[in-house]
Length: 66
Image (tube, rainbow, N blue to C red):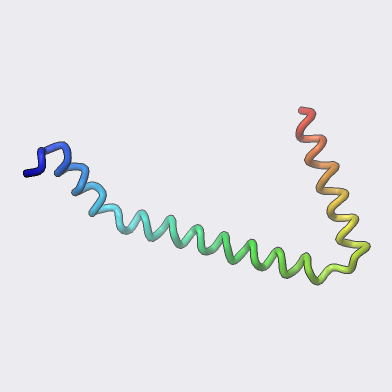
């Protein structure tokens, strides 16, 4: 037999399907954004990509010194 605390926990978990689906949908949307960004970066010419990488590196270095 399950005690009351465990029963309440099980009920909470069983009732959280909507929240889990919303979180999953958010993750899938983010993954689509990642794939789109990679595809866009892959279309850049080498010069533009190098410039973007350098700008990103500089920005990250500046954030690290704050």
